[in-house]
Every structure is written in structure tokens, then in C-alpha cells.
Image (cartoon, rainbow, N blue to C red; front, side, top):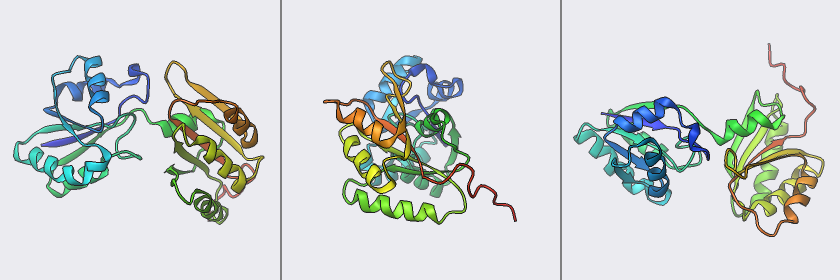
Length: 240
């Protein structure tokens, strides 16, 4: 009995790894956040007949125990995938992993695509150390960002800040970031990464916000990298 935690493409299906394909083809059951997305991936690799356990985010708590118990009782080889990218990173998965571990089920990661590392790699913002915040809270966003800024200023190193955001909230989020961090703050914005209409923007947050304000409709999930405002290299020497 084993639970494979498998990273799947964040957009372009060709980004799936050979190991991920092998594990998906040979497993007994697939645990997924979205049946539609899971079937798209399984069809792509020729494994459409797999048994599927549906575990969306709102039902992870109630479903995880049942799924873990079935994996154990039937000695199953199971694969956990999310809609895109690596499971349990701002997506369902952590509760199921915990339940499986409690029952003695082996947990094996199958690494692969991640929106976080993809954005950092092309942002041009130093990323030796970074702070990942996931999706910002819908309420109290400005207050949350102020606390983040206060915390970052106390750190002995210069981190990049990475966040996820949905297209219908991005304008408000950019406004709050500009207000808290300042209009000259450098940011990178990746939208629809690895897909046909992928877009990458870099510059002052004021300028990026101006671009987004002019658009009536914005589509696609967004990953942002924010330069926290310290001088490049400041505080990087942590040696004793």
C-alpha cells in the first residue's frame, strides 16, 4: 500500500514527467481535486479507465479518512494529484497525506511542475530565499500585507515574496501591494504559465497595475513574485 504524491503540468500537458506517467498508468486508484482535469491528464497518457476518488478542497477533511482507510484495507497503490502542479501546495492533499501516514501507508513524492518555482526561475528577482504566501486572504488583505512587510523587514536576509491570485481579484491585490510596499516595488507577474496565451510582465508595480486596470477582462491563474524592497544582497551574509 502506497500513496504517490504526483506533480502534474500547470498548463502544457507535455510537461508531465516520464515517472509521473509510469506511476499513473500502474496505480490502482487516482485521488483528485477535479475529475475533469484528472480525466484530461489520464486521457493524455492513455490511462483513462483508472478508478477515481474525488476529493475537492471543501470535502478533503471528510473524505480523507475514508480514502486512507480504503487504501489500507485493500492494499492499494494510489496516486494523489491536484488540478495543476504539486499537490498540497495551496491545494488539497495535506490532510490525506497525514491520514495515510497515521495508518502506516508509505508516502512517495513524484516531483515535477510547480507554479512557484516556474515563476521564480524567470522573474529575475533573487530567489535564494523566498517567502510563499499562497492566496492572500479575501478580507483584511491590506492588514495582512502590512504584517508581512513588518516581518520581512526584521529578517536577516532578502527574500522574494511569492503569491497566487485569481484573475477577478488581481486588480484589487495589485492596489493593496502598491499601497503597502510602494509604487516603485518591483514585481513579476506570470499569467497562464506554459499555456498558449502565457504572459510574463516585470516592472514597477505601478506600471503593472496600470496595464491590468486597462483590461476589461483578465483570464487565467496568476503567480506573482514581489521584491521586498531591500537592496540586492543586503543581509545575505548569514555566516557566524
